[in-house]
Length: 126
Image 1 (cartoon, rainbow, N blue to C red):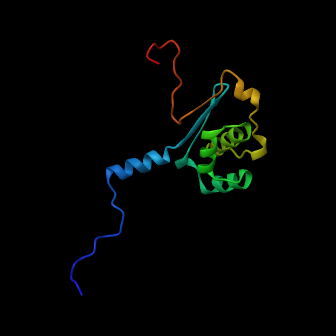
Image 2: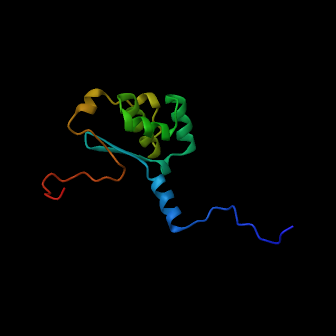
Image 3: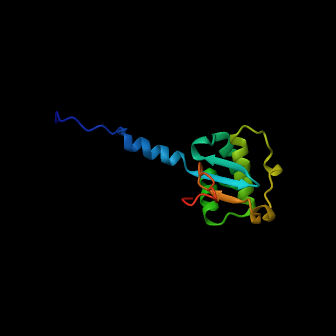
């Protein structure tokens, strides 16, 4: 038997791993409808919200992000708005949130990364 000490199997926690974890938790979206921002980030989603979302659309928050990246349709955008409202503490029913095609085609509609600031049209740098 060897007296050599085995390396630890525990994860090393460095600034890089912390930054990667923070970046992962910042994944999400910001949906703007008529000037109202609906934002959700992975780190803000509770297990309760994730379970309820899965019951309604068949996938959790990560699945919603994947589907939104590919083809955000009114059902997905409505679900995304519901998630953001639940994160804010609203006890809103899933079926009470309805985003229409008219909402999505309106001038004030946008989907961006969370935390993104709206560009100022008068700013030549923006």
